[in-house]
Length: 142
Length: 142
DNA sequence: GTTGCCATTTACGTTAACGTCAATACAACC
DNA sequence: GGTTGTATTGACGTTAACGTAAATGGCAAC
Image 1 (tube, chains in turn red, purple, cyan, yellow):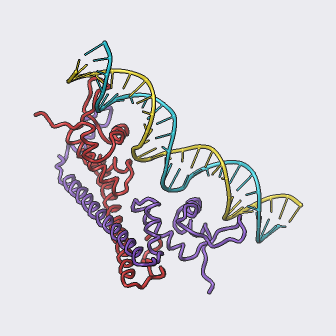
Image 2 (tube, chains in turn orange, blue, yellow, purple; image 1 turned 90 degrees about the horizontal axis):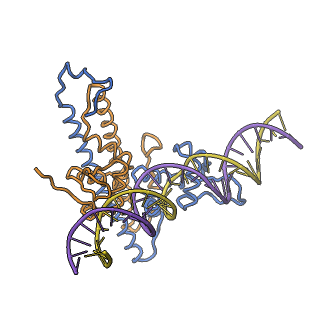
Image 3 (cartoon, each protein chain N blue to C red; image 1 turned 60 degrees about the vertical axis):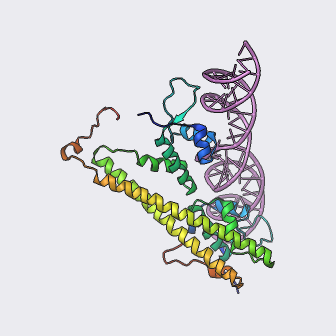
């Protein structure tokens, strides 16, 4: 079964990024091109790598660092030996999940703020931003 | 009405950032300290600036650039002259809202992915006896 | 065989968002 | 007056995530 491969410009155009970016991702271990017998020879990527790239770009749009992204994406391809490592990975996954949920919450708040502002704005009652203070129960971290 | 003011270290400790960061934010116009008659004199910030800082940090956690954040935070304090500018601001606000909603969606997808993975991971059959057999000493990598 | 045309390597440049350090200023306390 | 403590100003350093440019190599067409 010969797998469909993608050239670097294929991917670059498809995802609207530069080839340099892709090479950089490979350089830092986020992507892997198929083995080239000789160097100085064009790179090709499998569909699997294409999917990785997609995940990477999603992560970027969400404001994660490449380092963070690497750890998360690697999660999908790990297969842990032994109970201890499994436990460790599970814990890591849960931490990430918690972070994501927090981000969603904060985005919802931001959205609410903007909507509130938009509303006021429409009603021509231009607010003196005192009212926008987000007084949350917990503390300062909102 | 004497307003409560905050020193730079006040804010730095309260929000767990460096004073340098706060000065930097002021440097790039994200914050404004109360007018100091003389230079070389400590900065103080109003509650209003404190709220701005809070918004800025929220933006940062969400992966926005300081430039983006500045534009959004400024929104809260604009009061537009004339219909044209009002229209412009409204449009900008709506664009931001759309972006935010997209981010939320993508985060939900990411969350779903991770949950799916977590699930598979949990259901993975681990044979009792072999699970303990962690091939530790100088084995091979698979 | 040489002319284009890509792709690769190597390497130096760039920007954002601070960190860090040294010199200076001011204020309080001894 | 000297010391201690804290802030302010430059000013240079740093890291991540690429951009960009120059030299090189492969290959197909002419």
